[in-house]
Image 1 (cartoon, rainbow, N blue to C red):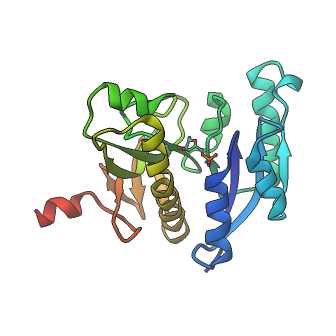
Image 2 (cartoon, rainbow, N blue to C red):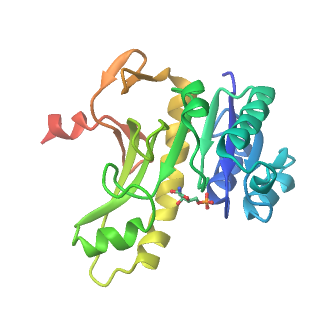
Amino acid sequence: MPKLRCLVLLSGRGSNLATMITARDSGRLPLDICAVISNRRAAPGLEIARQADIPAIFVDPLSYPERQSYDRQLAQLIREWQPELILLAGFMRILGAELVNAYRSRMINLHPSLLPKYTGLDTYKRALAAGDSHYGASIHFVTPELDAGALIGQAVLAIEPGDTAEIMASRLQPVEHQLLVASLELFSRHTVELIDDMLHIDGKLHKKPLLLAADGRLISAGYFNQRS
Ligand code: GRF
């Protein structure tokens, strides 16, 4: 099976990148991680990339004072690496519309909430404060509006009595990793596109995101409705 050529943008820890490397090395995912780019020199994710012999590139925001010039530099690097898919995995910088629109259907973001709830930061605290019964992770197409592009997949967890933001984050992390692997598997096996701002898989419209099932696969949300 041809390998999905993927470029990762990150600012922090890099646990999602580490998960991708493991999935690639174990043969679970036909993946070519062509490069990792960060806006933070000290991002641990860059070191994870280096250890795995993946080109790790720091693009210093201080060298590009305006967003447009920073984005132009990113765009140039992305063009050079020619990825099929760009993953934002904790990339703490808003990208301008020109760059985002140039990679429609090909740039995706991981977010720790059940979007459209809680775009931006402090998602766990906000879910707790609202008294929500559930929380989770989303993977979605990147569009110029923050965390607002069509959803591809979600993983849903219950909020338990006594939960804190820290407990919720640590419970979500391995599930988010599963969601990422399942989503990359989807991209490697199917044509996943944003058409008219909606998710299409192999040309078929999906009005709802796919859901992460207990066996680690992504299934259509309609599946639950059919069975209940
Ligand atoms: C993830 O929780 C993701 O949802 C958010 O940033 C975090 C990145 O984690 N956007 P890591 O750097 O991959 O460990």
